[in-house]
Structure formats: C-alpha cells, structure tokens
Length: 191
Image (cartoon, rainbow, N blue to C red; front, top):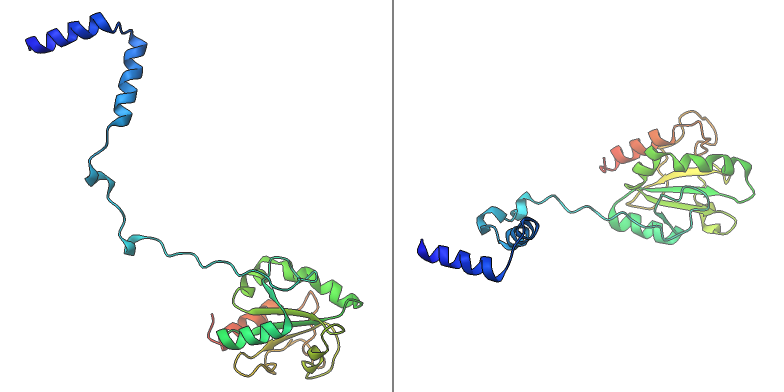
C-alpha cells in the first residue's frame, strides 16, 4: 500500500492530470486491452452461410429484350444448354418487326428475369443469324419463342403457347410466357 501511495505521489508531481486528460488516458488504455480469446470464437465452416452463386453475365447483346438477363449467342447457347443440362429459351425476332418490339418489355418483368437464371437465354435476329430459321417448326414468323431441349438441341413441341392453334410459338405481351417457362423447368427437372 505504501508503494502505491509513493507511485501516486510521483505521478501526481510529474504529470499533472486534469479530469479530461484522465478520461482520455482511460479510453486509450481500455481500447488497447485485448479481450480473452475465448470470447472471439470463430464460426465453424458448417455454421458459415453458403456462398452465393455468382450471377451469370451476358455474353451477347440484349437487343432490347431485358438488360438484366444473361443472354448468350446462338451457337454458344446451344452448347451451354447441352453441357449444363439446362433448357434453352430461344427468342427469334427481327429488327423491322413491330410485334417483336411490343414483346420486348415482357423480358424486363421481374418474374421472367428471375426464371431466366435457370435457362440458357438466347435472342437472335433471324435476318442476322440465318441458322435461327431452322428453329421454325410451324413457320418462320416473328417473334417466335421456343423452349429448346438440352439433350438434343431441338424445339420442344409440347411447350407452346396454349392460346394459339396456329403459330404456336408466337407470344404477345399478354400471353403466358412465364407459365411456359415454369412448365419447361418442371419438365427438365430444374424447378
């Protein structure tokens, strides 16, 4: 105890402290104290949240069909669909087509954008990519929206616009394209 009093007198004589300085000194000292390591327990790997899958990026232009969609080029899309076992949604259009322009906003709707993550999405101008005309089972009208099977790269003849008896791959903005996409995911086991 005597030692403490001597130390206190020494500090009081050599370092005159006011209340503000004492408070600042206490704050600095408290900040430098390392808490016991047991209180900083690290989470185990199994407790960590799963890593988020990175959002796919477009490798082909949207051509106005929804900038939030990861569009692929025609050949790239066919190859990716087969390699990943994902159905491909192929939108065949033409720059001069007024009905194609009417359909474009549909591809910015959130539900369709969300579903697009489970498809390989391709949109092609049939005047620029003549191979797209091979994907016209009932004609080469535009716009045509087809679900392409991942195993053989051919259009799925059962996934069509049920509101039409002819031009069954034609979709207007009022048609249920989202419903067709959901059926495709159910069929190909990617629900």
